Amino acid sequence: MSKKPTYEELEQRIKKLEEEPLCESRIKRVFKENMEKYRSILENIEEGYFETDITGNITFFNNALCNVLDYPPAEIKGLNNRLYYNPEAAKKIYEIFNKVFRTGKTLRIKDYEIVKKDGKKMVLDFVVCVIKDHEEKPVGFCCILKDIIARKQYEQELTYLAYHDLLTDLFNRKALFEYMEESLIYAKRYNDKRVILYLDLDNFKQVNDTWGHDVGDKLLKIVSNRLRDTLRRTDYISRIGGDEFIILLTNPTDVYPQMVATKIIENLSKPYNIEKHIIDFITPSIGISVFPNDGKDVKTLINRADKAMYKAKEKKNCYMHYSDDM
Image 1 (tube, one colour):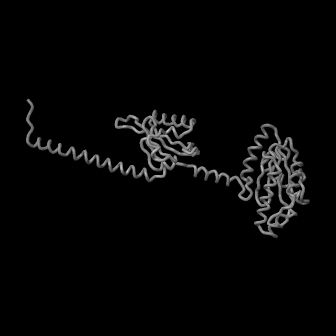
Image 2: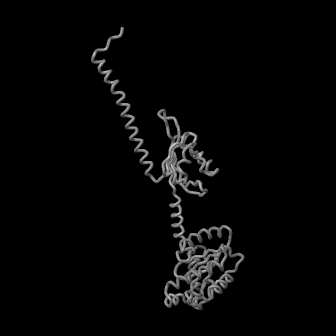
Image 3: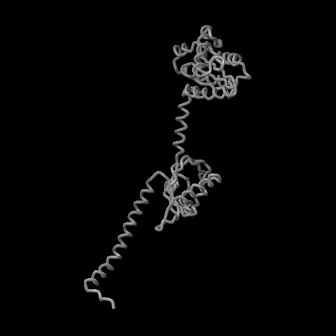
């Protein structure tokens, strides 16, 4: 026969029962407050955020996701995350989510390309992690997307500026040296030749002194365009500073350097009409060096083409090949 509880014990039990609803309501209130904070944070971040069920159907998202994907809220609710990827990307994204599901580990993906509603491509960084229930079973996924197309464009612009001359849009010294290094490696491997043309404009200082640097800059742009029109697309044209240019003939086996130099002299010596000024005294002096005859590395080939150019400049409006007596 069980012992009857004492009055004090009954009082404690009643008190406990009275407190249980209070504890539950407190838990609900705290939970609600935390959810409100959680949603407030998600709505105020720039990144797109969404959650899906285990099959990939979107169950929750913030407003930023609408901006990132260019979808109205009504269309995103219940949308399957595979629908806004192209078929090839959809396969890859499935593999990513599947890996997160299997391992339970968060994955960070960089430079991922998706297709927006209007068909335009965009590049994203995103993070995927699995959502688990109270029994630690996977029930869905959450994902943060960040549109990095602006950053990619900025990086491309920086890369372009690092390798191009701002005035003429030709390659600069840095680009030339790097390209020549690679080109010489290829030439050595296949026993090819490479030809360097070092070009300097005669009487260019007179343009700046007479009409100012604006006219001089416009003349350099015209010179650059004439070089592009004269040479082949496979030839590498760079402006290394001032009125000096270096041209690398990457496939000179079917072209004689003197023929190219003669054609350049002919085209660059034609008069320039700039701001109603007829400039008819600009001519090029060109020095030529050949790999491997005149040097087997970039620095040697450029130095020897430079020496040949200064020799040509003694006469002006001509080209000179490098020779040992220089």
